Length: 313
Image (cartoon, rainbow, N blue to C red; front, side):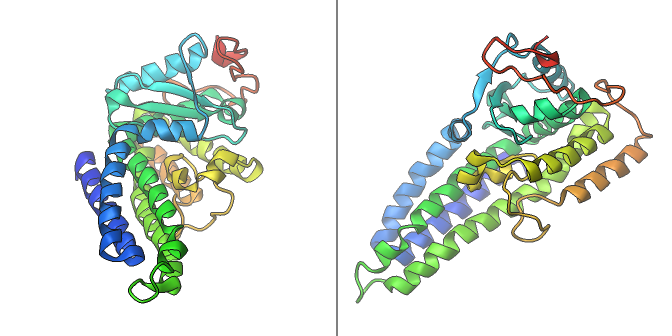
C-alpha cells in the first residue's frame, strides 16, 4: 500500500472515529459539528501538521553555516537515498532523539535534539539521520504527522465529554457515556497511532542500514538513545504525547512494554534485527565509521552561527 493510500485510509478512519465521538456526545447535531471540524482538521493536518509539530517541540531551523559537518553528512546521505536535501532543525533538549516530518520528500524536515549531537559519535549520528531519511523515502512522515495531529484533536474533543454528556439528560447520552467517551476515544486514536508506527520503525531501520551500509552504527545509536531516554526527561514530548510515535525512540518516560500500548518496538528487538542484518551484510561498515567511537561532547551549535566543536566545522 502506497504512502498516500495509507494516509487516505488513515484520514477516513480517524474522521469516522471523530464523527462517532461527536455523535455519542451530542447526537445528530454533534455528528454534524464533528464532521465539519474533522474536515477542517484533515485539511490542516495534510498541509500544516508538520509545521505544527515542529513548533510544539520548539525546533529551530539551521543551515549549512550553523552546523556544516551535520549538513554535509545529511546532504550526502540524502543523495545516497535518492532524496532532495531535507530542511534541518535543532531542538534544545538534553534527551538524545530525532524525528522527521513533512507531507512529501520535497517538503520534508529532520529535527535532532542537542543531546543526540552531544552524546553520539559521528557514525551513530549518521545512523539516526539515515533512519529519518528512510522514513521520508518510505512516505511515512505524512501519515505519522497526520496521525499525531488527528489523535491530538480527538483527545481534545473527548475532553468535552462531561459538558456534552450532561447537556440534555433526556435525549443526550448522559454523563456516564460522556465519561466513557472521554476515556475511550483517545485510547482508540492511540491504538491507531501504535499500529501505524511500530511496523514503520523496523522498515526505517532496514532502510537506514542500506543507506549507510553500517547496521551496527544504528544499533549502537539505538542503545545509546534508549539509555539517554532513561536519564533525561523531554518536557515538550511529555506535554504533547500524541507526537511520541514520530521520534526514533519513544521520548516518554512511562512506556516500557513491547505490547499494544507501546508506540515503538522494544529497542532490544530492533538492535537484534540490525545485528542480524549486519551479519548478512558481512559486517560491512559505511562511509561514516569513526575509529574508537568516542562521543563528540562539544558538537552542538548553541546559537545560530556560533557553533563550536566538530559539528560546526
